Amino acid sequence: MPRTKSFGKRRCYFIPKQKAEEILDAKTNNASTSKKKIESAAITVSDADFDDRSIVNIIIQMNIISQLLKNIAKCKFCNQLYSLVISEDSGSRRGLCVNLVLQCIYCGQATSTMSSDMTNGFDDINIRLAYGMRCIGKGNSAAKTFCAVMNLPPPPAKFERYNDILLRSLIKVSRESMRNAVEDTVKNNNSNRDITAAFDGSWQKRGLTSLNGVVSATCLETGKVLDFECLSKYCFKCKNRNNKDHTCEKNFEGFSGGMESDGILKIFQCSERLNNV
View 1 (cartoon, helix red, strand yellow):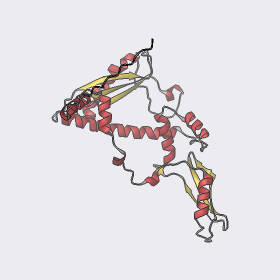
View 2 (cartoon, one colour; view 1 turned 90 degrees about the horizontal axis):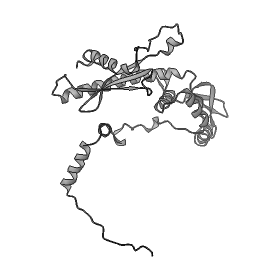
View 3 (tube, rainbow, N blue to C red; view 1 turned 60 degrees about the horizontal axis):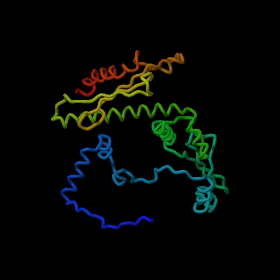
View 4 (cartoon, rainbow, N blue to C red; view 1 turned 120 degrees about the horizontal axis):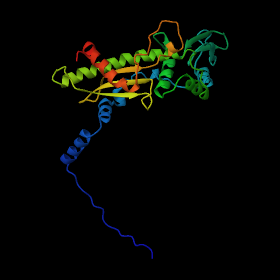
């Protein structure tokens, strides 16, 4: 026999406003440290500085922008309408930064400009390409594939130079961020510079056979990183017998599991000198 369906009224519960706020506060207090940090650091689009929309990078086909200029612009030398065409000087190409040439088809006069601004002697668009690849865990090979699929110019030949630029910038920003985290922790501790921190170690791969590891000191109250120490049992330049002077990246010898205790000791030794805590 077919089953009979039973219908009933849905029960509705009314939660007072004060009770709802208490529940919301309880959920916030029970949230993970990562969620609290993300919510405290979250900003809306209106808070960001987007006053100048002209600095946004876009991808556009050359024939489209050439047709657009040809239809609306006129040459400032011969005053002819529908005379300007845009092209690329491939000999002056620097990665994704290209040399755009605007030329009149009647008088032959031309004006050129690079397609990207420069930051400290490097093209901004190439720095962003390297940064984007690093953010997704990729490098030069992935950048070449991406540019080929998107029909873009190939990435810059000396791609590793941009990684060095990003490394210096990230070190500067991370130090400033950790310095601010220390001062916030001291402020919340009634200006007492004897603060409490939790230490944790992590390795590049499992099994405690990793050549690289990192140890971080985290504030117990805010969950923010106060300091970190990178340890490595391997130096690429030393391994390849590079005769040039370089900073050796090898700073640890022994069992990989000992990186955690060694890193904690180094953080303690540097804490008073760097942050006076």
